[in-house]
Amino acid sequence: MMVLGIEGTAHTLGIGIIENDKIRANIIKMYRPSKGGIHPREAAVHHYENFIPALNEALKISGIEIKDIDLVSFSKGPGLGPCLRTVATAARAISLKLNIPIIGVNHSIAHLEIGKFSTGAEDPVMAYLSGGNTQIISYSNGRYRVFGETLDIGIGNMLDKFAREAGIPFPGGPRIEELARSGKKYLSLPYTVKGMDVAFSGILTAVLSYLKRGEKIEDLSYSIQETVFSMMAEVTERALTHLKKDEILIAGGVARNRRVQEIFRTLAEERDIKFYVPPPDLCVDNGVMIAYLGKIMYESGIRMEIENTEIDQKFRVDSVDAAWVKGNMHYRTYDIMPGAEAKIEISRYLGMSSVKKIRIRKKYRIDEIDEKIRKERIKKEAKIIHEAKKYYEFIPYIFDIDLENGIIEMEYIEGKNLREIYNNLHEDERKIIAEKMGIILSRLHHGKISHGDMTTSNIIYKDSDLYVIDFSMGNLNAEIEDMSEDLHLLKESIRSSHSKFYSDFDIITETYRKNFKHAEEVIENLKKIEMRRRYS
Image 1 (cartoon, rainbow, N blue to C red):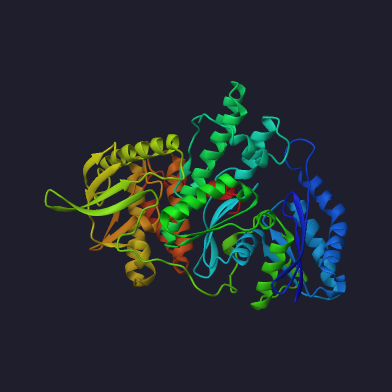
Image 2 (image 1 turned 120 degrees about the vertical axis):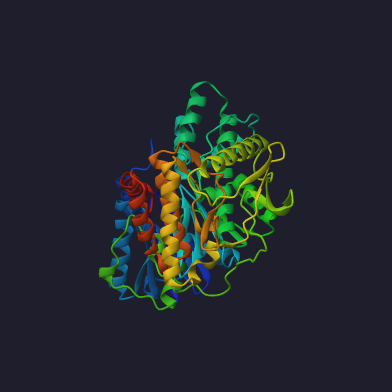
């Protein structure tokens, strides 16, 4: 089968041609604004003007004629409306002219599938790092799902905004990487991780402040790279832990950065898992990935009529039934589930069973970041647990703290991790548990305490009670935003790991409403969080 793929979600027009599993052509034309960021209509004009020349070049390289194409695939979304409409119109015209099938595909999933195809990865957690996209994606329960993402701007856009202010031409990423190699001093920047989500706008504000104060561009580039890449490695590791998977794939234009590759390779080595990165021309937006995903979707039996090919600027990854995904799912079993940031050891304390949570040094983080993160989080976790027990009793007692070595020793709860058993519970028992989760959140939030990583992985089920663990990402004096994030993380946890019972979240929110006087304000803010997330 000869497949034509057309990519055009943002600044790149990509024309790819594949024949079965052979890449025949990969033509990439990038729109480069004269100043500022991407102007959607100008980018769309760029795609329109370059489409026919790029298509002819791809056909020439492939040694075929347009009539030899059997299927046309295009990027349906997510992306910039004018750009998406341009490539969709072109794809429809080709489909009608040649009387061949057409498939509209999800851009983010295309990155993941071409990554699997080009590297041999089978069931990875993908860190998708590009201009407008920053997502942690993996397969679960019949679909690809977003386990974490940026809460504000994409990692590549943030780097480009810094570059513009520093006088570095677009695209700024490669030049920032080059400058960072000469950086000597780490300048402290905000490290904003919320569960498996990240935020970059505070980092941008801080680094621009340093720039105005005259700090060296090399040190700024070094500091910003180390901070944002470490953040992305951390949330990816948290997803690996939640999913128990043993493969990492990085993709997107930023994935070409050698430092980010080094950081993720180190993470993989620490966890004794596999690390993959596609070739550079398949990391960036390209038509080959669109062609390949269209091909495997078509071969799995998926069909589209012209009237079903409307674009979707906020095309959700998890809105697509991934019927084409088959093969080995990579899950690990553990006697004791390792944490993303800590090693867990069963021990004894004054004759009682205990757990030692040892915050391990992360080799992928430079010392300045690692020391700060480890000490801050162990102190914060101890304080939050102490306060949280005033409002909810089923939280492990802390026995001892060793700040220098990053150790908290606490009560051992001999129960079952809720994530592992939730899907197999009887309906009546599951509904009772959902009500209890609503009560847990209402009580913690009444005490102005947020958990910060409220997923079913951090809840232990014992003797009909729910014990909450791992408060290291939480906050005392939590505000509405923090409380909404707790709800959001739990909602996404259920959507991704327990999708058959997604309606259970309604039980959680109903119970939450009944037991917390500010519930409506929190839930309204949850809707705002979901709207501002890039692909809600």
